Length: 218
Image (cartoon, rainbow, N blue to C red; front, side, top):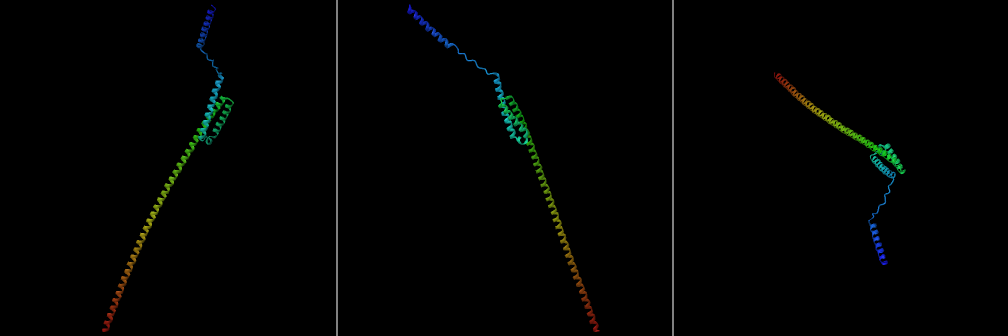
């Protein structure tokens, strides 16, 4: 009987061990509950990232304004934008993120205004240069036209002068030719008259000689 009881106890213990081991395998392990962060911590992180993004955008806007010539054409606006951005960075360091974001947004707005003003000023200057260049070119072409007209008029005057001089030369030559012809005619007339006079004198002398000879013969 004792042996039988011992055997029964051993069997019962074995069965109990197997049952407990099986239950241990089937019981699910419950995860530990997540620790929720406080809402204030989440809101602060959002504000920090928003302020950081606004500051980065302001830096970009200021850089674009400088590249557009705002330092020269909109210096006051650009300086204000840079000063407000500096204030935004200081506020960010103090973890005053809302103030930092607001200042950064103001800085971006001023930087954009400075960029647009610089672009407008440069366009105005370029337009003035273009108009001045056009006026200069127009004046140059007008000067060339007037010079060509003066040269043409001068050539025309020179041509008229040459024509008058040629006409005067021809007229002078005609006059000289006529004078020579008149002189030759007069000399020819003188010679003819002289020959006639000499002939008349000779005839008269011959007549006198004949008369003298006849009178002597008587």
